[in-house]
Image (cartoon, rainbow, N blue to C red; front, top):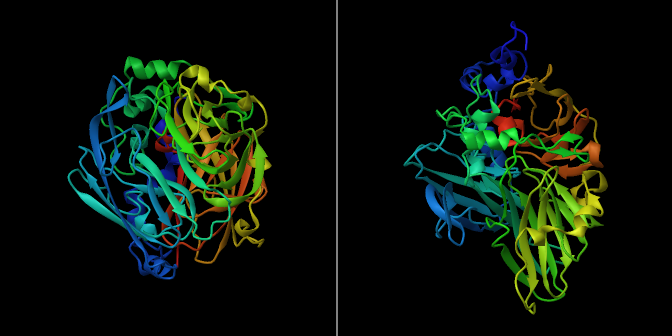
Length: 514
């Protein structure tokens, strides 16, 4: 790096202006009359919510954010943060289930010593309930509570997680299933499978961030400051210094960290979760990648699976042996379960490691498969479906229309240090009006892929056959083209869902105007 160009000046010149606008500077600009921004507290947000259909059913839940010792496997105890319901804290928050058009009311009680938040990932909900401080709410302070209250306009597989610092890499997440009252998938039973990369037995996310050398300046806080005094411990450095993984499918480097453990439903390979169904049942597997930065290949031993939905939206059924899934993405799989106990494996894409669960029929006998030997599936090296293979179901297709706005964004990095950003002429001027059709052209100028997530909307990926998603894999050197309808007013953002890229700067604001 030249002596005349610092990491701080990079943040200002590239994504820095986008980063700063997410903080206090943007709050001040919202008070000006040119342009007239729609805030999370404004009547346009309330009007959009009032126009949504309501089933008449309200689902009440309570989540407590706390720090506690948990048992990850028999005889193995460790300290973590997380969300719990009525049960004791675990390495995964409780699954929340509701139906399309229900009202969801969730009271969150913060018993941590730091502020927190809950983001409802992938849901097209009212802006003031998005859970992304400081944009949409003040963070939930220690010993305080906040009630999230919103309608659920879409069915599908979603999830919730902290949107404060790197808390989501501390198990502060859980599944949210919105059922379709008119479901025509043919599934006899649903099972949820939540994938996670786990480092808390060795170090903390904050120590890892310090070891990566991340810069988190420019007013980018999203709740508690990332710089909490943590330093790069030897254990954190060890995870970083093992080098980056590599994946031809992802166009090069696949991840920064060598996570020591991978979980499915909060359980390690030595003690996997066992999910049951009747022999011959059609089983829907709702798979959520809740990891901080790990892409996985997923497969079920002895079976081919059909992809039937992506990020909550129905897809044309596509049969395959395995599927690639990025952080924050979801896929619904349909499988006719044969008699037996079958390993379901999430293998790390690009380096060693895997998570394990077991799908078993009620007539299965013998031991539950467990351990690393059970994760070696031939299916993982056969046909692997990516988004290029998939297409939206007819009911999920976004109608063809010329865009009113085209935003061109560049994903950038600062060489030789850990700074990531979103640049380009449009990076700080994304200002739709209600009813606009918007096209985002995301050009990845960095050395690795990024899972790019859009808050408050879903898009049709013109790069991938119009497939509906809210989180898109963008490969190095690729330009992803994403269309969406601007029908959800408020203050939103687009950002990389690699948790460490996000806090290191790869984010930009989207501000509705009147």
